[in-house]
Image (cartoon, rainbow, N blue to C red; front, side, top):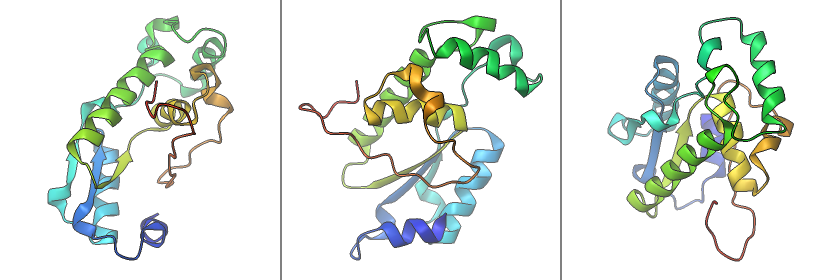
Length: 161
């Protein structure tokens, strides 16, 4: 992912303008630190943010992940459901949109790499693609440590919502 990221940067892009923001969970911290080290970005430009945490699956947390399919089935028809007391896709999307808007204000003229978790990132993609959040499972699955650009789909106003 690091080499692909470097290849995607404009030739004059300075690495001190790259920020790597990760959830506060151990595996994303480790991934973010390894990514930054691989591309030559100092650890001072790597930071945690709790808003990048994985979606809360409520009663299904720490259980059989195969049961997440039951929540995802509800996601397809109801963006605000709380089946099994799970965080709704609408809530996840609002949380991540707010984070991206904050990061854009804080890191103008910087490249920001988000290191998070699959479900949260797929839900975030719906905002960038300007598609209903109920369609998040129809998007291409994110693989571990996959680098994926999130271009903002055209719209008269450039907001994410």
